[in-house]
Length: 220
Image 1 (cartoon, one colour):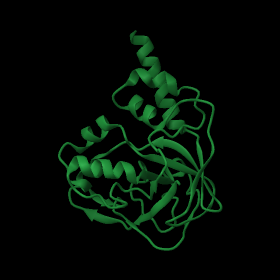
Image 2: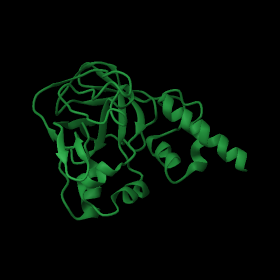
Image 3: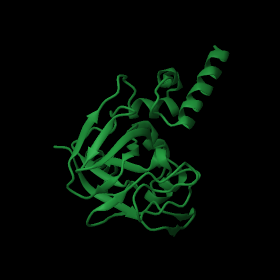
Image 4: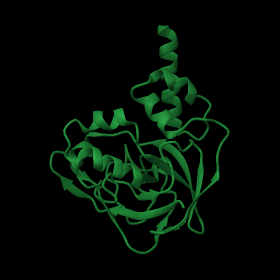
């Protein structure tokens, strides 16, 4: 059964070498309200009480909630030889029983009794992520693995808590997954044409895919 193992939120702190960040997510108890936070650059986290500092790069409606699978954290822990607690990757929802890597863009999840979330775009690693984990060469390692987790937008607001069931209630009629989008934007640009016409991708991602595809065609 697919479910939420942990709901994680963070308080902004000063990370040496980076500055203020909200990446340190920790499990919280009880239900947490989730709502659409507002446009990119203005809205923060979809979870009430969860800090996001760099609004230019994080948060907003298309990145309202970040989900990562416990199964994938366990695989990383085995590879890295160190434990990874729920929230270790800065995720808001640590899940079990749902294949986030192969979730379709635009797929919708009903979480608990009311909350509905929509798969939006993969997480792309940044310097803050690498400094936070303190793993040498982490960004490259993360990119090669291509198990990025998914950002979700809020379709129907509601509350979420550990133990909530996650049900996939809608799958769009295409084959563009979180994994494919991540690979297209990182190491396999030849996949970019597959992203064109995927309505549920954020506008910024669609524009970037179209622009890079045109560059490829011009250079062909």
